[in-house]
Structure formats: structure tokens, C-alpha cells
Length: 472
Image (cartoon, rainbow, N blue to C red):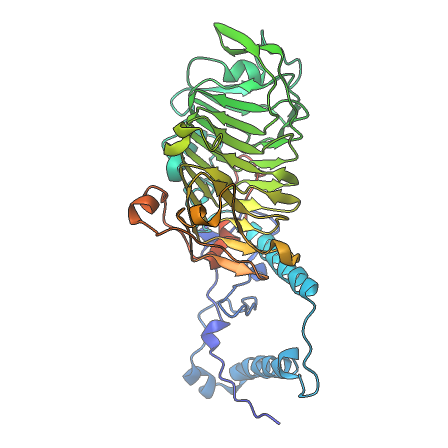
């Protein structure tokens, strides 16, 4: 028999109310629904509308003490009857690993739903920069000042006019109609492109972007799907924000316009969601991507200064390729930040797969993979910090990393490190290299937050549902 003595600090369960400016605009949210998540995962709704009483006040007023003492007694009894204290010497039950993983998934999903009520103040530096602004719709172009990482200087169409897309249909790859997305993205001047209403845009050929453009889907449900998708080729300063990109197909063997005064013949495309080919200063943020013919986001042929952030990626095999080939030397200067993304259900591999270059993988949530999460070849530098990796049940797929196309005598010299990553369900990261500080300096683009905060940092990943005059 075990005699247990418990000490309970009232300050851990009695909380001050939210300040009025911290309340969410979501009508489903109220102060009584807020749950504080402590380091011990104790979750008790705040019930006290004022500063908690002192013990001297309780001693002088027994009526005030009775409710608190009852609460403490209930907590003590429930803890004494918990499974943690009811094991016997004859029952050493080992939990089913699949049930453990299901419980972890349930806990993660519950924390995401709970945090979804809080649309700002999550510690995510991008979201905290703009999502608390009720007038975001009138201040759209301020988003360009919120970028982080290697793509932080991508200004898109910040300094240009607003272009409103009114026509989702009638895509003409050579002579695009005014009011269509294709007409907007090929213009020579900077443009901030928004959408009049919800729409599904099925392109007939690749959408060839011109420099200094922003595609901003906030305020509408915008889907680019069912045809070829976005190509960023030899252009600069591109922002893709708040759109759903899925079911992308191959295009090509056709003429396509890429500026007001030029069109040319395109060969067969890969069918990527977003293809960055020789592009620079590119930021892909808050998009939902899934189920494309090749990659969801690929960056090759000397592309650099890229940030991929706050995206929700699902249902795809080869998710993200960064680097054209092992022999393509121009990718040696590539720098890419991958931050605050949620790599979700139905993913298999390449989150990302890197060649050459420098890659900062920071504060992402990896809840699904079948083969591996992060891989590479041709001596890339990979700096993994503050991520959460939940391994699949398959014992042969627990490894986060995959060193490809080289014997161990070679890949053990590649600089791959893991700092502050949270490994769940047997996940493990195979480190390599001597860890030269100069190499990791080129693969460092922002300060990593603790992996314990990944739920809040990624709670809004993917395309958001934003309404005017309300926090997004």
C-alpha cells in the first residue's frame, strides 16, 4: 500500500480573466471556454471573475473557503482513482502502440481545435504581425512586411495597385481576358491580386507569373485546381497567400503568354502545385496544397531566397523537391526556409528532399509520413530546429531522415543537425557532419521557438477563412 501526499498550488488553477483586447472575435468563443494548457497538461476552465482570494481571507471567511475546499477534494479523489495509481504488482499492462498513437493524434487535434479559437497572439511571428488587425482587408499590402526567413524580402505587389479577379472561367493562355487571374499575373507593373468572390479556377495551361505580384486569397475561398497550376520561372518578388492548390495536372505543347508583349511555346510541364524555376524572393504562405501530379512545391534551377510557411500539405507522395539534380551546381547557393507548416495526412516522402544548398526547417508539425520526412543528396546543409515529428507505426519508417544516393562514407560528412526537435512514437533523426558553424550560419534564417509550442505556432496552417472587419 502506498501513502501519497499531494501539494496543490491554487495559482496553477485560478487564472485572471482575459483582457478585453485579447478576446477572440469568434462568436463561439467566450471567457468560460478558454482552457489554459500548463506544462503538466492540467486543463481547468477559469471560474473566478476577479483576483483570487488570499488564504488569510479564506481563514476569516469560512463560507468563502467551502467551495474551494470542495474543488480541492474532488481533484484529489479523481487523481487517486486515475489509472496512473491503480496498477498492481500482478498487472504490468503495456499499452497497444497503435492506441498510443491514436491518443497522441487525438490530443494534437484537440489542441489544434482549441487554439483555432485564438486567431492572434500565438507566438507565430507572421500571424501575429497581421491577423490581429480587424482592418486587414483595407491594409492587405501590409502583409508583405510580415515575411520571415530567407524569403523575407519578397514584397510581391506591395507597391502596386489592387487588381480584383472577377472571372474564374474562360481561361485563354495566349490572350487572357481582363478580370481573369491569368490577365493579372502577366502584367509588367506590380499588382496585389485579390478575388471578388469564392471561385474555382481551372487553368488550361501553366499560370506563368510575372515579377512583383501577390496572389492574395483572403476574404474568399479560392481554389486553383483540376488543371496546370502556378509556375514562377526566372522572375522575382512573388507572394502566394491564402489559396487552395490541388489536383494539379500536366500542361504543355501549347503557347502560353508570360507578359503583355510575349508568349512562347511551352513543353510538357511536371504538374506541380507551385513550380519555382530560377526564381528568387518568393514567399508561399497559408496555402492548402494536396494531390498534384508531381510535387506540391518544387524549387529548382538556381532558385533562392524562398520562404515556405504556414501551409497545410496533405495527400501526396513526393511533397517538396528543393534542388534540380545532384550534378546541377547552380543550386549550391539555394537558401530556403520551411517554417510553421503542418505536414498532414496522406503524405509519403520529401518534406522536403534537398540537394546542395542550405535549408532551415523550423517549427513545423510532422504528423504523417510513410517513408521518411526529410531527405537529401549532394551534400545539402539541413538545419532542423524545434519541429515535432510523430513517427508512423511501421517500425521500418521511424527514421525522420534519409541520406540518399551516397554511401555512408560520403553522407556522414554532410551537415545535418537536429536541435530541440520533439520525437514521438519512436521517431529518430540521423545526424551527420562535423557541424561547422559557418555552414549552419548559412542555413539559419530565424530564431526557433521551443517544440512544445508547435501546436500554437501551426494551429492556423493552410488557407484561412477571413471575413472583413474581423480578425482573420
